[in-house]
Length: 261
Length: 261
Image (cartoon, rainbow over all chains, first blue to last red; front, top):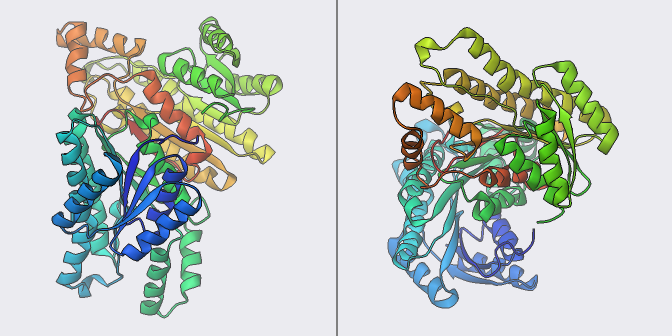
């Protein structure tokens, strides 16, 4: 299974985060040059350095996915330094626990900006350049099981991730004629800093113990163990590979049986 | 990719059909012993011979998936010959075209018996043997994009495949903690004899020529080409591999963008 992506350049946004870093490492190990892009250049650099230390190829960039200009600059720099970006994985995302009745407008806007508009801008930015150059590409957006069901204390996050599924379908339909495939993954409870932060926030609100709350959440997963970033990364790599050549516009639930439709 | 299934024993029901043949050849190339099971053993033997011709290992078995004893007999035969079945792909399926108002109850019953009950019996039989041995395994059911769309001229087929999607969810969750991974694929318009036959029958209902009927269908596929059995086999192989171990009870649309949820 090694070297499936030899010679390809892959952009990973949110590459400094848990799923992003896991994906960047897996794709690099399979031969891709990975552009690790993150709002925090420092985190992007750390991940790129880890990849290079393993003997693989990576570079670090900062990007604000909510800004079209910032995304355009990232696309330009990536092309200039590493040639055409034919694979994209959008992992940049934020979450904040808040009761529905207290959710402030500004937080709603911020979450939708980063998670949904940010995904759109990156997909569109790379696709524009690929179409202009007559090249084909494969893209995977990280949605969430929260995009499939109700979430009382993260209504903004759930809406943004449902939106990601929709934008992926639309992009897939729009770009099919250019030979581009666009898909999503919907992870469940992944062992990342974001998940631990969620448990801490929920524990604070309810006065519970964060570790106990996480254990409770994991007990509710049919497969009976927490998801690892590698579980997600493997499904992403599959969707980026030739093996998924007839799969487009789909959102794959990679969640140990938490969600279906 | 060679050797992903080295030493494994795979059972493929409907193994002489279009998708079944593609899956059998694929798994044979990747190292599995392939037990090709079909209603007509002579046709199963043709596929088994092709697997052996390519240097793989294969056996042919007569199997009526609607008969529980028959399923048990074949599972016993295969186990004696090549060890416990750890990979199962249920491809056995039938289809016919009827205007809704003319659909005979016998046709409904026969289709549900083969497509849905047959899938259940094989899945349960394979899982029981795995569980008794404490062995992990992977099962993939071939459902259809028809499971997720209205089917005015094949309501029985659509219902049977929708049943398969739900069965896979139940089995997936029931077996997740035993390390038995159960998922489905939902192919679209696949280049097989069954698809030709569908359009032959449909042309009688719609008064279009067979070619016109099929061409119209293909033009509606966003990805712009008919699906090959290899398109399906690639995704089946992924779901049978360790790479998909965190996917539980999912039905992956492999249909070039015809269906989504």
